[in-house]
Amino acid sequence: MNVLIIGSGGREHALAWKIKQSPKCSNLYCLPGNPGTQEIAQNIDVAVNDFQTIKSVCIENKIDMVVVGPEEPLVKGIRDFFSKNNELKEILFVGPDSQGATLEGSKEFAKKFMQKYNIPTASFKSVFKETIEEGDKFLEQLKAPYVLKADGLAAGKGVLIINDIDEAKKELREILNGKFGEAGNCVVIEEYLSGIEVSFFILTDGENYLLLPSAKDYKRIGEGDKGLNTGGMGAISPVPFVTEDFTQKVKERIILPTIEGLKKENIEYKGFIFIGLMNCNGDPYVVEYNVRMGDPETEVVMTRIDSDFLEHLIACAKGELKNEKLLISDKYGLTVICVSEGYPMGYKKGINITINSNLFNQNEGLKLFHCGTKISNSGTLVTNGGRVFAITANCLKEKGLSDVEVIEKERDRIYSAIDLITYSGKVFRKDIGLDIIGYLSPLYERNIQK
Ligand code: AMP
Ligand code: GLY
Image (cartoon, rainbow, N blue to C red; front, side, top):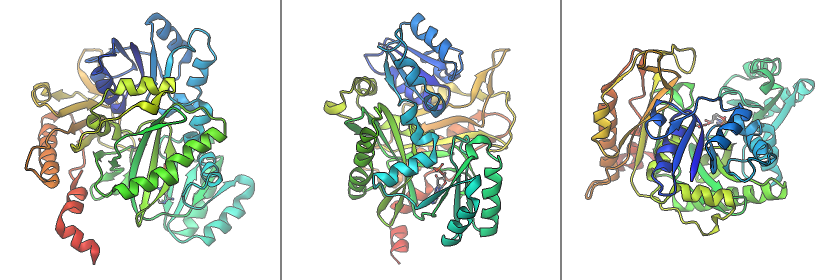
C-alpha cells in the first residue's frame, strides 16, 4: 500500500515512523514532511492546502491511502475534495470532511453540539458584535477567572484566561474588533473549569472506535506551568490519574454520545478525534475537540502502540473498525520539545543545528522526532519553526523498576541527549514528567489527601 501523510511536524514524523513499521506499507510519502521524515519516507514539497497539486501527487505516485496530520486542510475541506473527485474518491482517507472538522474549526459549533447531546462541558455563551452587552452580563454572572475563546482557528492563540472582569470585557471587545482576525467574529465565553487536564484520542469510523493511549501535554512555555501557552513543550503517556473508572466515564459520557451525535447530524466521520478533557474531582468535562492527533502527544502515543497502526488506519477508512484490536504497551512514553528562543512569540529561523545521530541510532527506545527543521540551500540542517525537535524515550520498563524509576531514567536519557543537540537559542523545559513523579510518590499522595 502506498501511503501519503500530509503535514510537516513532529506529529507527522511520529506517524510516519509508526506507519513505516507496517508490513502493509510499500511506499511512504510525506507532504511536505521534514528532514526527519526524509530519512524514512519520500518528502514531496507541496503545501498542505494546495489540493490541486496534492491530487496530481496522488495520481502520479499511485497513492492508496491519505492520512491528514494538521487541522487546517481538514477544515478547508480536503476530504470533501477527495470524495467529490472521480480520480481520488477510491483512495482510503483518514480525516473528517469539512463539516466534521467544524468540531475544531468553530468553538461555537462544538459547544452547541455538546449542549445538544448532553456532553459535559463548561457552561458558555456565544457573543457577536451586536450582542456585546449580553456578553458583559454573562461575564458578570461568572466567577473569575474568565475564559474567552475566538470561535475560529487562531493558530492556538485564540484562548484567553483573564482574572479581572474589566480586562475581560475589554478583551471581548478587542477580539470582536479583529484582534485574531475573522476567527474572532464570534467569541465563546466559558465558565472556568478547575482540575487536571488530560488528552484522550480516538480513531473512529463513525460507528466504532479505538481508544488510543491517553497523554498529558505540558502547554506552558515555562517550568512549573508558567508563562504563555504554546503548542506543547512535552508530553507523557500513560497518565496515572486516568484510572479505569475515569476512562469508563469518558467512554459513557463523552465518546459514545459524541459518535452518536455525529451520526444524528449526518456527519460521516472517519478519522481521529482528540478530546481535551478537564478532570474535575474525578468527573470528565470536555475543554475542546480537535479533529486530528495532538502534537507532541502523538510522539508518545505512537511509541506505546504495539499493533499494526496502518492496519487500524485502513480499517478506519473502510468503516471496519469493529473487529480491530489495538495493542498498547505498558511502557511510559516521555517526550521533551526543544524550541527556538522567543517561541511562542517571534523567533529566528535558519539557525545551524548539530546533532550526534549515533546517539539515537545506538539507543533503542530513544527517538529524535523532527518538528521545525529543514535542510538549507547549502545542505546543512537548520531550524525552521518554533518547535524544533521532540526527543522521546519509551523503552525502559525493565523488570524490578518502579514507575517513578522508569520515568526518572527516561528523563535522564532525554536530557543527556538534548545536551548533545546544539543550536543557538535552544530552549526546553527541564521539568517534563516531574509532576507525574510527584503524583506517583507516596509523599505526594499524603499531601493531596490532607
Ligand atoms: P482550547 O484551545 O479550547 O483547548 O483552550 C486552550 C487551553 O485553555 C486549554 O488547554 C486549557 O488549558 C485552557 N482552557 C480552555 N477552556 C477552559 C475552561 N473552560 N476552563 C479552564 N481552562 C480552560
Ligand atoms: N498539544 C496540543 C495540540 O496538539 O493541540
